[in-house]
Image 1 (cartoon, rainbow, N blue to C red):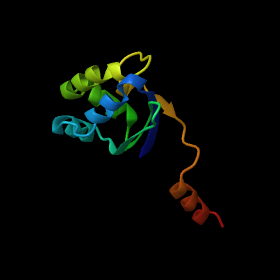
Image 2: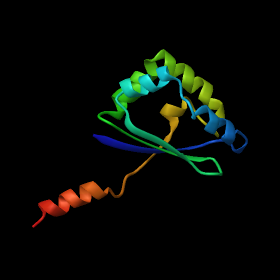
Image 3: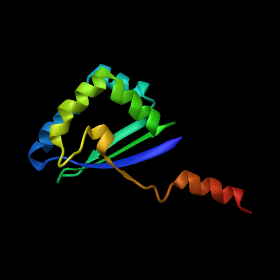
Length: 115
């Protein structure tokens, strides 16, 4: 399993609209995300528009490929692109991925294995 954390920047003037858009994501888009293999997916938005996302997947590459080819996801991402600062391509494919430096469960498991 891969844990993926990413960063995007929502344009300050569009923060409230972005929030509203995510209050009730259409069922077909939710299904596309789930079918892509992404689980435990959350978005966190700071007041200045810093957006941090997190999800788990078995393969980021396969998940991204599935969404890139899915008509519902393609339409959703095309509509969403205008919310973000300086983006080269679709938001779901152009985010800045953050490097995980600590995970509690991994640390505990490793500590139990080490005598």
